[in-house]
Amino acid sequence: MLQDYIPVLVQLIAVVAVAGGILGASALVGKKRPTREKLSPYECGSVPVGNARERFSISFYLVGMLFILFDVEAVFLYPWAVVYKSLKWFGFIEMFVYIAILLAGYLYLWKKGALDWSR
Amino acid sequence: MLAIFYMAAAVAVLAAMAVVFQRTPVYSALSLIVVLGALAVVYLLLDAPFIAMIQVIVYAGAIMVLFVLVIMLLNARPEEPTRGSRFAHWLGVPLLIVFLGEFSYLIFRRFPARAAPSAADASPEAIGHLLFRSYVLPFEVTSILIVVAILGAVVLAKKQL
Amino acid sequence: MATSSDLGFFLLVTIVKVAIILWVLLTAIAYLTWLERKVIGHIQSRWGPYLVGPHGLLQPLADGVKFLFKEDIMPADADRLVYWLAPFIAMVTAFLSIAVIPFGESFELRGHVIPLQITDLNVGLLFVFAVTSLGVYSIVLAGWASNSKYPLFGGLRSSAQMISYELALGLGVVGVLMISGTLSLRGIAASQLGFWRLGGILILPRWNIFLQPVGFLVYFMAAIAETNRVPFDLPEGETELVAGFHTEYSSFKFAMFFMSEYANMVTVSCLATLLFFGGWSGPVFGPGWLRVLLPVFWFCLKVFCFLFFYIWVRGTLPRFRYDQLMAFGWKFLLPLGLANILVTSFVLAWIHS
Image (cartoon, rainbow over all chains, first blue to last red; front, side, top):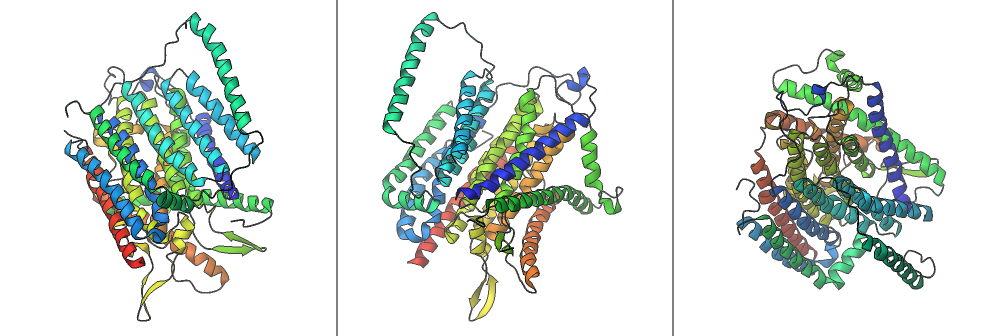
C-alpha cells in the first residue's frame, strides 16, 4: 500500500528540483541593473499612491467561509458515491435528506443576497 | 517506515513552533499549512489515505485559504514584541513544565509499547460503508451543523440582515 | 499493487517514468504556447509566430532563452521570501498531480508488469483535488507579496474564483464515481472499456459522457474557470488589472506562472478524458508493441482535443464580468451539480433494485 506513494515522493523531488533549478538559473544568469523607478510598484506609469496592502471587501471573506462549508459537504459525497451501488435506495434517501437540509441554508444565502457580488 | 514517521513528526513540530514564533502573520499561516501537510503524511503512514487527502483538501486547501484571506483582509502587520510581564515568567514556566511532564506521563502510560498501526481498513470504500450504514445519524446531523455555520457566516458578513 | 518484489528495479523504473513524463510534459507545454499563438493567429486572420524556425516551430525555445536572460526585477517593498515562494508553489503543485494520471495499459519487461502510469493510488482522484487545492496559494501569495495594487486585486479575485469553482469541479465528478464505484483513476478509466450493445450490434463505446452529460458540462466549465482561462480569466483581465497577480513578476518567475497554468490545463484535460471519455479506450490491433502504444495514442489524441478546445474558446468568447462570474459559479453550476447527483442516484437506485 505505502509502496504506491514512493513514486509520488520521487515525482515531488524531481519537480522541486526542476522548479528550484529554474529559479536559481534565472537568478544567476539574468542581468541586474536595478533603479529606483524600476523597483517601484507598477501603476501604469504614474507615481504610486499609498500602500497596496489596504483592507478590502468583506465579500472575499464570505466566499472563503462558504467555500469551507460546501467543501465539507462535497467531501462527504465521495465515500458515499463510491459505495453507492451497495446502498441503493437507502443511500438515496440518506443523501436526499442531507442535501435537502443544506438546500435550506443555500436558499437562505440566495435570499439574503450573499451570493450576489454587486449588491 | 519509522524513519519517515520521525521525519514527518519533526517537520510538524518544527513548523508548529514556527507558527508561534513567527512575527509576520502570513509566515505563521504558511507554517501552519506545512504542519497540516506533515500530519497528512502521518495519516498515510497509518494506512488511512482517504483521511490524508481530506486533511489536505479541507484543512490545508480550504480552511487555511480563509486564514490567509483574513490575514490579508485585516492587513495584519508584524507583531510588536512586548517586554512580557515578570509574573508570566515566574508562574508560566513552571506550570508549562508541570503540564508537559503530566502530559507525557499520561501518553506513555496509555501507550506503553510502540503500538503498531491498527489493521483497520481505512480505504474510501470501508469509510463509506461505516459512515453510511453505522453512523447515519451523525452524518445527517453534520448537514444541520453546516446550515448553522451558513447562518453564522451571513450574520458575520452582512451588516443589515 | 507491488509491480515488483525487487525494490531497486521498482525505483529505477519509477525514476525513468518520472523523467520521461516530466520531459514530455515540459515539451508539451512549450509547444502548447506555440499552438495557442498559431491557432489564435489563424482565428484572427494573422499568421502567428513565423520567423523563428519553419512556421515558428523554434519559437518556444527562443522564448525560453529570452526568459532566462531577462532581468529579474523584484519590487522594493516586496516580501522577498514569499515573492520567491509563489512561482515555486505554482509549479510544484501544477506538475505533481500528473503522477497519478494513467495514460495506457501496461507492458511486460523482464517478467515485471509495468503500468503506463507513475503510480495508481486508491484515492487518485482525491490526490489530484488535494494538490490542486494547494495551487490557490501561489496566486494569493504572489498578489500579496508583490505589495502592489493590481497584483493584490488580481490575486484576491483569482482566489475567490478558484475556490468557488473548485466546488463545482468536485460536484461534477460525483456522478462518475457512483457509476464506477472507485476513486482510482485507472479503475475509473478501465470501467469504461468496451461497448454497449443493442441486439448484438455495437452502438456506443461505454464512455461516461453518454451517462453523465450534465456532470461533464459542470466539470468542464468549472475546469476552465479553475485554470483561469478565457472566458473566466478575470484575474489577468488586462483591460482592468494590467496582468493581475503576476504584474510585478519578470524573467523566468513570470514564465513559471504560465508553465503552471498550461500544466494545469493538461491535467484537467487528462482528467476529463479519464473520467468522461474512456481514457485510453479506442480501436486496438496489430502486433504486441502496437497494442501497447495505440491506447497511449488514443489517450493523447483525446487530451489534445480538449487542449485545442481551450484555445478555440479563447479565440472565440469575450470575458465575463466579475459579478457574472461569481453568480455563474454559485447560482448555476453548484445547484446544477447537486441536481445532477440526485438525479443520477435516483436512476441508479432504480436500476440496481
